[in-house]
Amino acid sequence: MKSIKIRTPSEQVADHLRDEILARTWIDTLPGEGWLARELAVGRDTVKAAVQHLELQGLLESQGIGRSRRIVLPKNARSQSLHVKILLYEMDDAGADYIVQLRHQLELAEHSVSYASKTLFDLRHSAAQVEKFVRENPADAWIVLAGGRSVLEWFSQSGIPAFALFGRMQSFRIAGAGPDKAPAFRELANRLVDLGHRKIVMMVREERRKPNVGRLEQLFLDELKARGISVGAYNLPDWDDTPQGFQKRLDSLFRVTPPTALFLDTSTLFYAAQHYLAHHPNQELRKVSLFCSDYHPAFEWCKPSVACFNYDIKPVIRHAVLWVNKLSLGQNHHRQLSVKVTFVDGQTISEVQ
Image 1 (cartoon, rainbow, N blue to C red):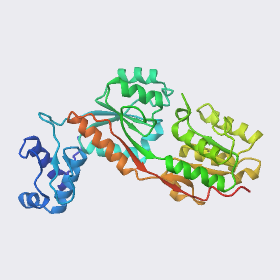
Image 2: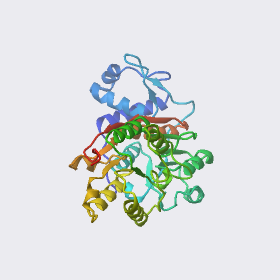
Image 3: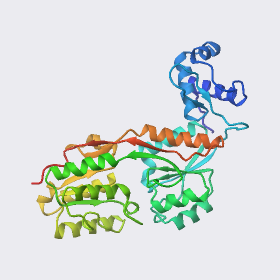
Image 4: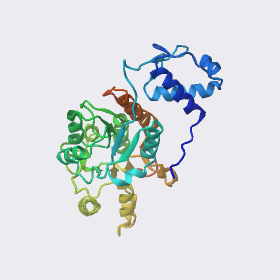
């Protein structure tokens, strides 16, 4: 039996206003919230929520407090439901809170959403493999999670509508959103040096190292160098991007020149490194400082508190949904949104013992 979709009052008002806009009842601006509330015999809060929903869909644009919202519907445009595929980094990402929220918001906007049957990890972050897979599995729009440089470069040149959800999108003509981590990277580098760390190692996934070092990773290394630390391959080691490869690299690091601080760029690597050090025969390694650049809700449950970067994910989700909705109206913009990042100085980093 087909499930019944219950519409809230604000969603019903939004549907009505959308129909009126598409029918050209209003041309340039939408009437004020007070007038609409009286005309539709609903509460003003209901109208406000409905109007915000239409702003998210790209049909309306705020012109400031006290001014009527501008209708931005192109001539002869008609919104349509799109088939959106999400190309995950790895399959476990399907359960991430922000991915679940994103899918829910897109489905509320009546788009069809599915996860690609293969992930970037499955496709080895290869632009050639991604191209073959995408062309064999067509969709109206693609949302690419944490894509590497070569993959996002291909999407930007392919003519296939795509949105970069995080990843190395800079310098490419592709819509996207993610955190602006540069100031936080500088703050972290200086914090570690101030705590006496000189042997700092960044363990980052392959797409952040290849085909060349990522902008943020290079910024971090440059900041260390500016503080008098000699940097090289030791600080950003290469490793086989598998669980076995990660363990092997940790073995080699702590066998020869043990680092005093480890930088992990995903929560998966953070927990793997934490587990490795907690069960290492050398109990001194439990004093190694750990930092994660990828916030995870589970960190809220951790004591000692986890040193990490944090930011508001909601604007990122809104930007992605707005891009899909504008695309459904025939508008494929390439704007990239950066959100502010906070450095959380947790208890997993401390002075060198």
